[in-house]
Image (tube, rainbow, N blue to C red):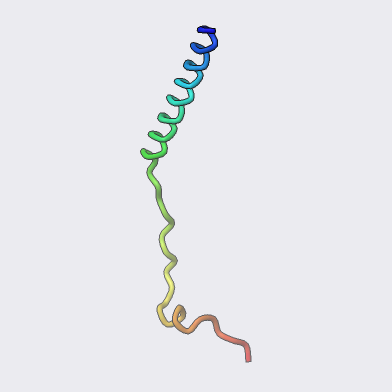
Length: 52
């Protein structure tokens, strides 16, 4: 009976350690974004030209 309890606690400790390690690594990750494309302001306001 005690061996089952010990194995269960060991598995729980390993899972807790892996969860904490993964979360810690995720918070240290440096997120970056792509720069905005260079567009003229008048094209953005009027939108694409419509065919006539």
